[in-house]
Picture 1 (tube, rainbow, N blue to C red):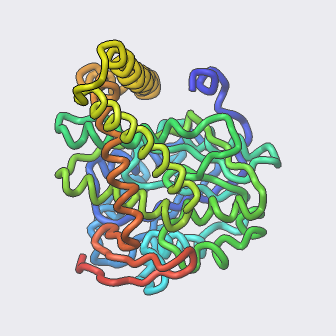
Picture 2 (picture 1 turned 180 degrees about the vertical axis):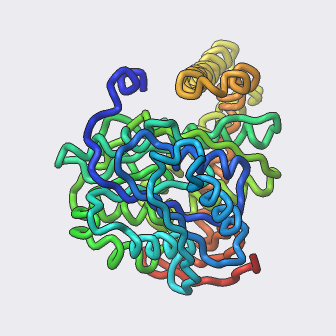
Length: 381
């Protein structure tokens, strides 16, 4: 991350279309979208898509775009071209993916790059430039960042931050990265050549796992750009957090089965080691020397977890200096709560082994396979 931030964001700035699917109004909705509207990028088009006129995001977006497009508005002279589309619903794919497919229809024919983002993330000013710069290398198929949850005052917010950053730090300078739909870009020519809209997005709930599948089928390269980690924050009940975390792993189980199996094995081994160690410590015949050895092993494992969590605290403070006050107060939670994460993860991975049903923003889906989705219930907006 430090090496990446020491480099200039890049001068590869081809015409770009940025598509942001929206549903509902999240915390910091206007502030987040204002960041997307004021990127340090010379030539980009910004397309917002909602499912219906009744969606709260539609009225909020309409008001925001009217304010931004006023002649006397700040940055009015450099504001990107914008569009706000209504996608409707689909019974054969997820609502987010359906919104993205609708957004493709409004892309300027001159666009050379497609970028995608989520409305609940807050990008830096050079996010788009940094995201697209790696695409100058023809060997890069997809450029991606990831979300970075900031811990809030609530315990559940802190647990979510620790849980999710353990996933974020799987990304790096290697060939086994995955794409994240909230911070992702690829060339228009590659998008068309891989037939992502027709083959991979037609019957799916997950836009990013579908792109991961397309890239792997093509033996391509997903490049992770640390400058494109985007801040996010969310408060919820513990039940809502478990529903959210279960959904992430259920999606992994359906769309990246090998990754799910590896995760299940890794977290099962971690938690099994601790359970076995505690059982051995409480077993009367265990000798004092054996107890000391077992205790040392368990404490070493915990210490390594704390050290990794401490690195995440450092990363957060360097990446998001404007949130220094929050991170000075709650940043230590990244390491203090790290021993909880493997147990929650194991629960998530086990649950994913028994169900293919998820609920995503009021819609319940059954993920029957990579290429088959059934909408079970759609709540009124």
